[in-house]
Structure formats: structure tokens, C-alpha cells
Amino acid sequence: MVAADGALVIKVLVVDDSAIVRRLVTTALSGDPGLEVVGVAVNGRQAVDLVAELQPDVVTLDIEMPEMDGLTALPLIRAIAPRLPVIMFSTLTERGARQTLDALSRGASDYVTKPSGTGGLAASVTAVRLELVPKIKALAGVRQTVPSVAVPQRRAAVARPQVTRAVDAIVIGCSTGGPDALARLFAELPADLPVPVAVVQHMPPVFTTMLAARLDANSRLDVREAADGDVLRPGAALLAPGDHHLTIRREGDRVVARLTQDPPENFCRPAVDVLFRSAVEAYGGNVLAVVLTGMGQDGLVGTEQLVQRGAGVIAQDEATSVVWGMPGAVTEAGLATEVLPLDRIAGRLSLLSRV
Image (cartoon, rainbow, N blue to C red):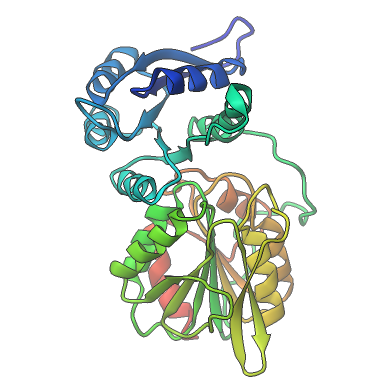
């Protein structure tokens, strides 16, 4: 759809059985001239019909609804519109986290958590607008302005030579689309991976606990949510817990995980930049950094510091990324050693960790 001034307008279908939530989301989105709510549905069956009728650009989809829930509706929507961005609306509970991860594994693009309701309607509208609008625009392919950071002068992508030095650890950062990307990546990594892995995925508490358990169940690696003092060891991966930065520090002859609640960076806690910077201190340049699908540019500054020490950097390519924000920023800054489709990254990690 095109607005009167010629700008593109993103058409959004809102699906939720709660009239209060439908009003909340509609109000939050109506304040942005680049968005238009073209329809609302009260259950998954209506949502499937309206996707075919209205052909929206993005759908926000509740999980628990009568007649047909969001998890049942999602594959039916995917059958009609395979590439349609679908954002799940989730509760910040263990059940909500489990259902959200189920939805992401079934093809949902991303999720937002429902506000707690404290502070009244105005505060809830603001909270939804701040979280939901950027995701809608990113998933719809709209370029967004992000706060500038100090980065190297842009050079040709993949300008750096491939890794030839020893790798002592792998650090991974991801956001939108990350849970599914991590699941696919970890499923292909060998049990005898000779180096430890540390991961930051932008997610709230409870969600990261559930994600770590799922990755562990479907991976040959030992995957767990990081706890303060955990020792990094080969064949094991630590995932940053929600609302905590994950840092890694050398203490004697060991490298251990340290958790902090320092201020968010890039509006995130955990933040990829924090992990990557700490990896420089712990390992110098003997690190392989991986930047997977995600919004924004978290990880860009930390990647630059790793590159200055000679570290290798693999960025997921645009074609296989849900959103090519984080890996795109690293690639466009000329920091990537390699830009690879997701299905080739595990093989490269296994190979390069044995250099």
C-alpha cells in the first residue's frame, strides 16, 4: 500500500481473542504513519481466512485462542503465504516461553511479550510500540536508522583473509531469527568440538532457560544457560541468561563465565558487544566470532575489537537471515572473514576450530 505522500505503508493483521489486546496493539501501531492495521481476527481460523483475503504484509498472532490457537494456525498461514512475517504475541511465563519457542520452530519470524499491565493503558501502548514497531519494519524489509557507533571505514565485503591461526573459543551473537538458526547450527556441530562456545541471543529471562534446554536436547554439545563462575570447556556451550550480560574472563589457568547486570548496550541485556569485548580480554585474537541473523547492529563494535587482534569473523548471509541487520552491519563494515549461508557455518566452525 502507498500513502498519499508516496511512501510505502505496511499492512498489518492483528490476531488476538482479547478485545483489550486488539485495542492495545491497534492503538500502538496507529501512531506510526508507515503502518496500517488492515484487519483484526479473534481466532486462528479467522486469521487464516483474512490472510488470504487481505494479503497483509505482517501478522501479529496470539498463541492461546479459542476455536483455533496460534500454533495450529501458523502452518496454515505458512501454506498460504510462505514468506509472510508472523510475529507471535507471548506471555512472559514458562508456558509462554515454551509455546513461543514451538512457534519459532514452526516458522514464526519473531515474537514480542505482552506488557504486564502495570502503569496503565498508556504505558502498555508505549511498551508495545517500542518493541513491536521496529520488528514489524525490520521484518517487512524497511531500512531503519540506528544510533551511530564508531566503526571502521566501510570497505568491500569479505575483504579480510581467511583464518589461519589457532582458535581457542567460538563466540556467537544473534537476535531476530536466532533461536531457529542456533537450533540448526548446534544440531550439526560435533560432540568433540575442541573449543568452548559462548552465545548471546537477545531474549528475556525464562525464554533463555527454555532455549538452552532445547538446544541441549537436540545437540551433541553440552548446552546450558550460563551461571556465574561456569568454566568454559571444549564441547560445551554457554548461553547468556535473559537480563544479564555474559562476559568471559581468564582466571588463572581457566576461563570462566561472569554475569553482570551492567546497563544495557544497544538497548539490549544481554548484549553481543559485551561478550565479544570480553573475549578479546580472555583470548586475544585466538577467537572465532559468528554473527547470525538479527535486528540492529549489536556486536559490530565488539567485532571490530576482535578483528584488531586478528580474530576470524563469520557472518550469516542475507539470503538465509530472517533479518540481515547484525550480520549485514559486520559485512558492510568489511569485518567479515567469510559470509556464509546458515547450512555451511557448522562445517566451517568444526574445521576452523581444529586449525
